[in-house]
Image (cartoon, rainbow, N blue to C red; front, side, top):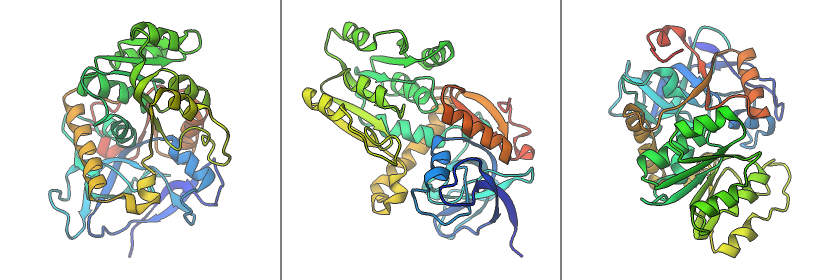
Length: 364
């Protein structure tokens, strides 16, 4: 008899919030898959957007919760290097089911082998689960683009992606100057603690003028904008130097709502500077499977490995601003906070299985 549990997700197409309890049958791992007993997860904006728009065209019910930390419960036939009982961190396929649980009985989820890595003992399950999607987003935006000595601007350095991107640029990729911004004392302080050399208040400071002063009028070598905000996009594009890179997370300018396209000045601003417009979107690897070739798998797998290595060394460490129990009401409240913006700095972590996380010193 197949084992089942109640996950958290959407049961109707384009239903949006609130999410509901979703029955899930524990799947058997196929080749290249790892079955994980989930200890902890975290919240990402993508999850409420999938519930609202179902832009992958999946047939409900769909269970959500893509960031995973837990214990291997089984492996597919050709999986090597992992065995039942290993503590791991992973990201589930974004067109698959996630690992949130609607009740206290815990959950299981599948992840591909290349997106599953051993968790170092120094990293708790909770903090491990705060890394995958946000870390890979920052990694895809910065790794191989930031050169030693660069000046990098990461707006929103107190956000889930932003605070990891600031740490990555400042502590692992040898940027000479990392500039960030925030809209209040807590977000500004988190960006500063993450390694930003200069942090401005976007509500009061003329950031473009300050960047001009810092760079002698030249502008920054690279912007990584993960704010999902049209006003921010135009403002940050104007800070890029000639021939620099403007990297945006998600579908980018003119498409922030995904349901209507609007005119955006960003490409014109960048064209005046001869600057490059680069989109980073993890979802495309799953919505357009031809993109997930061997090179992409190797790149994302390397990102997961470095997430563990850098966290173990204290170089890129997630800040968990709030920890919630896994359940329909708590997850809905957390996602509403994310959607409203500004309510939580860093990440919202989700404890899925208290038995597994009981020894987690960073469980908080």
